[in-house]
Image (cartoon, rainbow, N blue to C red; front, side):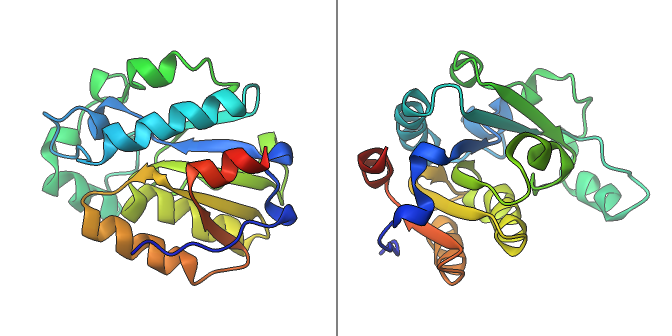
Length: 194
């Protein structure tokens, strides 16, 4: 069962940014080795959230530009299909994500997207409503450092897509351990606070 906690005023979505992690072809197209089988259902909820957060939506993209002399070199050896230029269509936003007309799109060569680009937009201790893919990789790698830095995080469990259902649920359970900095909510709960 997905853990949920009550969303309180500290996580008020009217003051928050919607952060959608990596809505890219490589994670959404079912022909990709990294496609999430949960993407379609998560995307339906992300679209609902994006409508409510109009003007306060940030999309991220993971791009394959990490230094290959680091452990990233071994990573890309293990996943050669992904070792293509950042301009490859695999790394494009999905057409649906591009159509959102988000206020900001951030590219990072790391799983986690918490960093100077994001804080330049949101401030150092923002309220973030987080959705995206993959719950058990880029989402968790963003949420935990953001919370550690003092951000208020509402993680929208049904607007996240894991590599599979089990990994998704395990990642939600881990992030749920970081309450009250990380609160897990459903799309309907977030929209009811807006």
